[in-house]
Length: 275
Image 1: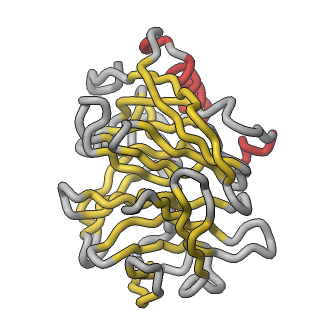
Image 2: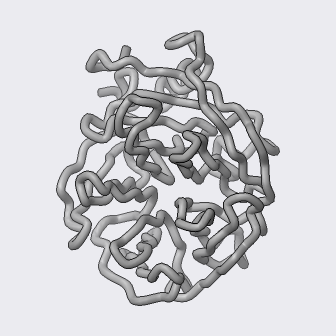
Image 3: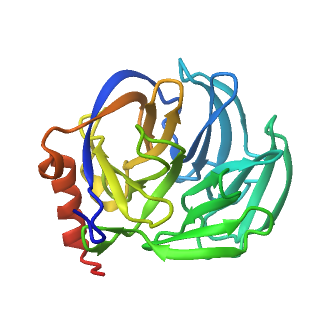
């Protein structure tokens, strides 16, 4: 059990299909759109690449539309819905770039936090969840982006550093709201209770596509999570991955002894940010 008695459940990730990840970009944000489309943001990496926001066909991965407007000279990060379209945070510019539903650049607003990382919109609370590379999860006012709450993500007696590319699932397999994030420098996806920020679930994307020895340094890591509410499946990908994958997840019969739980425990122990 976790620090407050919650049970951490390990899940098996089962690959259902793959599709091309056109251009193998440095994925920073991934969202589901109406009309069987995905929305993706990419940072300006490696050298020579430019940040962009684009739409993809959910079934084929084909690029439908792409723009660099408003992101010139910036490193695009997470993306989330606004009442009129989309908001893209940037890495160190203290700006969030705004787009309408058609990806027309409509302006920018001040983003008063040190780094843009993961971002997700909570419709239930009408605020944004945001991360910044530390162990802290922030809740931001959806209108002003001012801080409403901040606390560390926790798991197995440790603070969890580097949750990225957030995805809020309103009801995950009957367990209620769950905020998922990629655990930086790994292929683990961890779910936390959005009220307590304590871990409740974890699954591992090991075995999907090509692996790279530099993943432990933050390159080629898993990044990009979309939940498909009609099926309960996920679309996942990574930074400079050549493919995107649709997966289903099912509870591992080994429970707390499952490999994803044990791997997460090893990662947290090695990083040693104790509560």
